Image: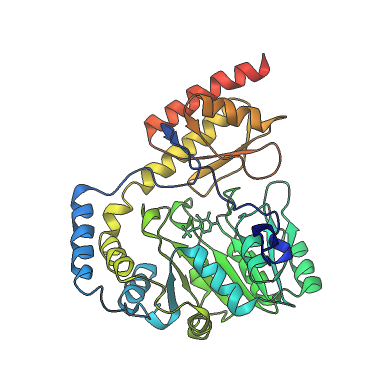
Length: 361
Ligand SMILES: *Cc1c(COP(=O)(O)O)cnc(C)c1O
């Protein structure tokens, strides 16, 4: 058999692996990471936890990741206990498990576009039908039209990112309630950026006791400055968590991952210490972009979506030529910049000023 004749699923033929470009440039503002690495002290504690875990790497890890899930429950609060919290290798793995449990052939998953580009990939991978409803011009989810589309599509899974990526838009709790009330299946509120939300923006965690079909996902990849650790979690009813336990791979979370994530959680105040700085920098960046005459979506996350450009590729490339990598994503004409350190944002602003002059001239 030639390689070309491998019996690939037809929907995967010609598909290239998706992902943001990983380029080695001085200013990396393209995947919404926390720009502040852990301190030497936390790095040492993580190293020591990995060393301890290494002593029993001949054994499989705790399949249920009990201790880590208990720590995550403590971090999330809202009276959550270990049986209502799930953990996996990033919240992306959690999403896949959700579709493995609740999606599949003959089933439908729905979200509100523009939104996270990975959802449709997991729908494809699990043979779940994927459909979207449009957000309004300011990227909000209109309750009436969301209810109508859920009533007509009858989705088994609704994904609602809040704050949404790539727009930064958070959902009011009334919208989440309306989705849960009308959805015939499960509603997953993806709160990957929850820690960055502006004051007064609530978390859907507070609704969990009222809606057994609601799940909230979080990640340690963004605010927590732990993207390389690969840990995400989900909180819901214990029945929802039990469904994910059925589809997860055996021993999906390595002993090292469990051990170092627990150290990170124990050092949460330090790892999260720069979140306030990043929110201030975010608001300043949004203000600066608007002062340049650009359109910027309101953001409750650690990035800003701005535009609109007749040729966004030209602007993206011009920034890259000056050592600043941002993300070409979202609706046509828009670009997304992650919030970095003050120094990185100064580099971004000065590069963009030059590029905008070139594009105009
Ligand atoms: C970054 C991100 C995640 C988290 O990804 P991990 O797999 O936990 O690293 C989840 N949802 C959205 C919308 C994101 O942007």
